[in-house]
Amino acid sequence: MRKTVVIFDLWDTLFTDERYDFEAGLKYPYDAFFSKRCTFEEFKAEFYKTFRPLFRMEENGPTEVCLVEDVFPSLFETYGIEMPRDDAELEYAILTSMQEYSVSQDVRDLLERLSSAGVKLAILSNGLFRGSLVERLLSETGIRHYFERVFSSADYGVKKPGKGFFEIALKQIREDHPGIRLDEILYVGNDYNDDVRGGTGAGIETVWLNVAHEKNADGIACHEIDDIAKVTDFV
Image 1: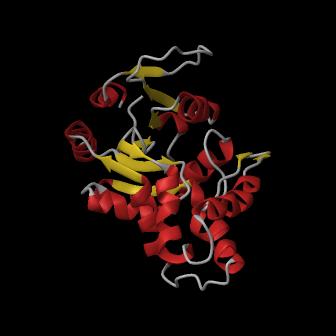
Image 2 (image 1 turned 135 degrees about the horizontal axis):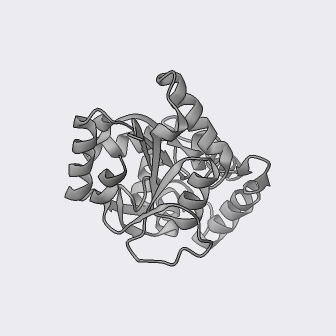
C-alpha cells in the first residue's frame, strides 16, 4: 500500500544529537536568575522536587512535563523572583544550552524526495519543550516547510510509547485528510521502546531506524533500516 503520510520521530531520527547535557540546561536559568538566591546544588534539589513527581503512568500512557509551564513557574515563586513574560525565549535558551544538534544531508535529501512525491509529513516527538519551540528549531535548520504538523509531547501531557499520544496525532491527521486509512500512514523512529513499541502498539506500520543494529528483543513486526535514506523503500 502506497503511503500518503509519513510521521517522523525527531531526536536522533531527523535531528542528530551532537551533545545532550541536562544539567547544562538547568545552569542557564540558574546563572541568569537564581544565582544570588541559592547555590546551584540547592537550585537543582528544588527543581527535581517539583519535576520528578509530575511523571506518572496513566491509562493513556506515561505523562509528559512542559518545563516552562509545569516546573519553572513554581521555582520562580519559591525564590520570590518574577518569571520572564517571554517564556518562549527562556525555553529556547534552556534547550540550546542543553543540546547541540544538526540535520544531515541524507535527512534533507529524504525529506525533499518525499515532499516532491506528494507525501505529507509530520513529526511526533517526545520532549520537555513545546511544539512552537520545535518548529523554531526546524526553521533554523531549514526543514520546517516540509512538515504539515508538529506534535510535541510537552503540549499534550502524554508521551510515547503511550498510545494516547499517537491517537492525538492520528486524529488530527485524519481531520486534515478525510478518508485516509491507517495503512496509508508510516511511522519512522530510532528508539525501540518509544518508537517501535509505540508505533506498532498504535497500529501504525513502523520503520525502526536501527543504526546501532540492536536486537529486536521482543520480535516486534517492523521494518528495520540502518540508513535513513531507506525509508523510501516503504513509501
